[in-house]
Length: 158
Length: 299
Image (cartoon, rainbow over all chains, first blue to last red; front, side, top):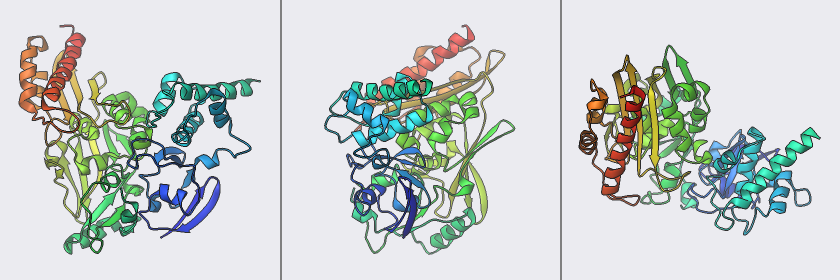
């Protein structure tokens, strides 16, 4: 099946089995290995990407359901030499340790801050409740997201 | 999960409900199997542990997740009609539902994390017919109707009659759930959603209670309950409902509530919990809701 969609801001089209998982398309033919596979059954959130701006588990979305839609992965947030402010906050605040959960958490947090630029701690924790991290205990992750929100607010007021 | 196996399934995306119904009718007539795919939060996960299919005889997967006739949330004349493919995220964000049907929006907020809310649908929840389905419990408390469509037109089945057994429903092979409908609880109705599970975000319920009670001049006029994970199908708790409509809630004892709850459920030991724990929690949730009702009534 021919699948055409907007991936990280660019129009892409490829032939894929209609029930191929979006996760496998990204990591295989599209070469975007930033999105990680954890559990493969929608529990851990490691493969979180944004589908039309909303966080989804790429292991539970099939290729045929992506046709005509917009997908954003961690590669679309920033580049190696130009991290997004959110990624930068994770570096500064120690929000990443082993890194497997980090791309998914970045995408969930990016969706949160886009919809709600000044979230409270409860809202931050709820937004990443579908993302499992086995290293950090989450505190540094929450602080990283809060840091990014604060920086954005101070940039806007300054 | 074997992604290679998943990639073998034939797949189509009908453009309209009429086209979908024609396809379903033709395939049912030929006894060909069809899978209706919405968010995939059950079916795709289940491919990982379901018995392997014969690759030469795979069912046709029809994507109904973006079918216009199944989308959207309509409110008119104190009735709600929620499209079968409306997602939990759309439901929990709907301003009128948030105000008038908190039992439903609270459920949608806890059914899974945002990634699951963004994909999961009420139609999928009802069609899969898991007794642990949170959406089915909330809709049971609202005494919702399930609206099914086929080439023969629409028919309406009360949710209390929709489930026929464990993961079995009255939906025929040539039918699709198009929407659910219910009367909005009157303003001031008592509504509660209580989910008991292992993990805040993603847990499947050990027990969940949805409850709605409406009063007129201090007298109960409608009581709806739905409970997940305590019987082969979503429990409607008829005996507990009757107690909620008693002339005086103050006269309903905790012992009566315990007995009624035990009468209305048939919990089992399974991977998530035990029958004994589920019985305890089910009774505790029912008694807590009645305490709220008594406190509100000042009795």
